[in-house]
Length: 373
Ligand SMILES: Nc1nc2c(ncn2[C@@H]2O[C@H](COP(=O)(O)OP(=O)(O)OP(=O)(O)O)[C@@H](O)[C@H]2O)c(=O)[nH]1
Image (cartoon, rainbow, N blue to C red; front, side, top):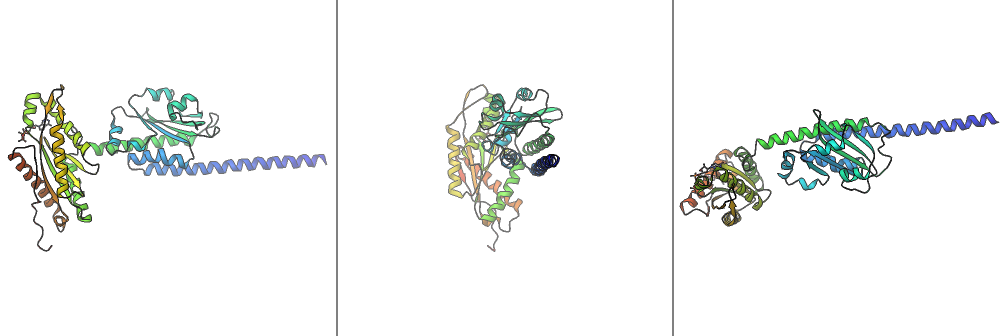
């Protein structure tokens, strides 16, 4: 009897072990599948905002993590600017941009992945004090031998990440994240550099033309009028002549900033020429466009600007307005319409300049509407 009993116990124990191994294998397979799918999701993110949203929001839910944070090296505030440009920075509370590499070097002295207990120091530096993080994986993001960031995955399960186990798929993920991050930043930086005026950070003329085409199409589709303004700084030459070119540059930057602050996010601001800005106001009929222009004129004339050596400067501007109505866009040659809108706003501006400057003037679009309408 005795030997049979031992055999049966051994058998039961073996079955239990096989079942545990089977479960582990199943779990690993599931995890691997989830990682492959995460990799595809990461690779399909086109914009930087999509990528950040995926990592900081969706990834946390998909992998049942209690916290995900991302530290990115941004020595020239490029990422900050890319995100500021579209007011998306606030959407990513888990994102930290750092100018110096030192915090990354402190976190990864030998540039390798860390998996294990979330110590109070790690919780403070990587997870902003999140109390429910018990274990964590800290992934160094490395490109061309350079630490460019850190992705931190925190779990409330103390056994989820351990220094006793290997996490090859997590290391692999870190490499994919680093490449995706670098690509998204480079792509958006390039795009930005080709469409932004470097001095004022407003759109350049090329980007204005593209935006004008988009807005004309939208006006045609929705029937909503498009307000167009040309703003020219008055007597700008004396500003340069008296206070120097650097002061003139500073005024241009400050005016661009003032326009950004006063206008809506959906409006477009472009530097059209030396001291001239073009503004597009989608969904804006004539009385509203005149009110907006008048507000800008008042704001500029009431602001005390300063030169590059802090000398006080008083500035005024003249603004010519026109409106693109849906009727202009029907059967229109778009490039002819674009030209006509700018020309009309310019004539309205000319009227302001000849009538004392520091004023606003409206002129209906000069383009003839086709007779069939
Ligand atoms: N500082 C600086 N000045 C610029 C820039 N681009 C153009 N300007 C200057 O803008 C001035 C434009 O002068 P004008 O066209 O005579 O016009 P204005 O003096 O503003 O006179 P009104 O427009 O008739 O009121 C010139 O002195 C240009 O050198 C720039 O990028 N930086």
